[in-house]
Image (cartoon, rainbow, N blue to C red):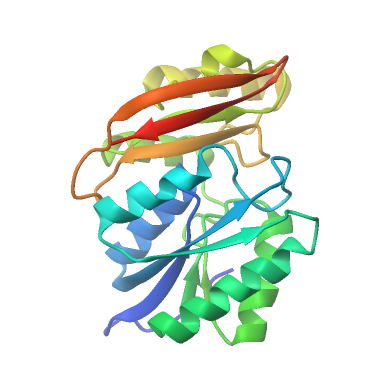
Length: 232
């Protein structure tokens, strides 16, 4: 999936950033490989059922950018299927012009729907595409998050049998045991790649300090729940 590049010098990259575990960990891995994280790129969608973009507590990415010390480009979209890709392209073009990036980093694991569309935009804009998590073993990945001191909470669930009790849960050993069981019984993707759940990172090695969860407001019904959080 990724275009191979020499990393002897700093390659300036923009991170497609949702504030969740996948985009944060991909950014972390890219930095370990020698990429310079020149900017974050976030899309705020008006459509809570967006096919492309993470929506629970998406506006809190600005706090994450602040503690990472990385500038952020924010683009808004109505969230109409396929049309929202034009808004993503506009944001990526801004990043290329303003921050002189030549690579886009994504958090895609197995979603060909997202990966293929991002790849096409990158090709159009003559940007390389790096997917550090592509086809990683999901359980190994979740355990790595814990070992690398990532503090990640669940901010949205969207599949049976997940309910409101999952909101606010931290990804820890007990969580991994739970998602392995759910995968065996209901085919829930252990890393939520199918949109079964969304996350927010309160701390990772890229942060200069921990973010504290100040407020968590839960709304939803049946097997669709989301959190509106406040952090400081």
